[in-house]
Amino acid sequence: MGYKRREKDNMEGLLTEGKKKFVKYAEGAAMFSMGIHSFMDLAKEAKAVYRIRRIVLVNTDIVEEYLENFRDM
Image 1: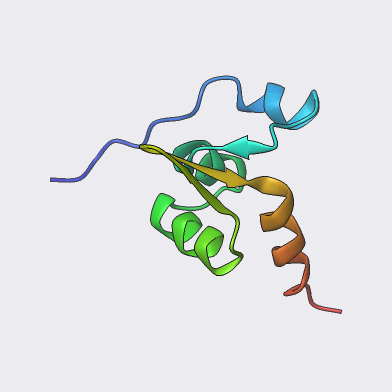
Image 2: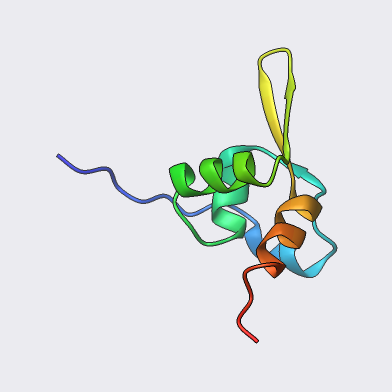
């Protein structure tokens, strides 16, 4: 039994009106158009994960900078 894919509410607003600096895994995965587990691995590789009590936040600036290193020239 598969899961029904859910679209994040107001993602267009995040991308056009100045984006958030810190996001949760689900928001970041939707923002970067990838699966949640792929985004979790990417954020950990980039060392952009902040754990605050029981909440995990990802710094999107660090993730974007990390992704720029893999750009084809």
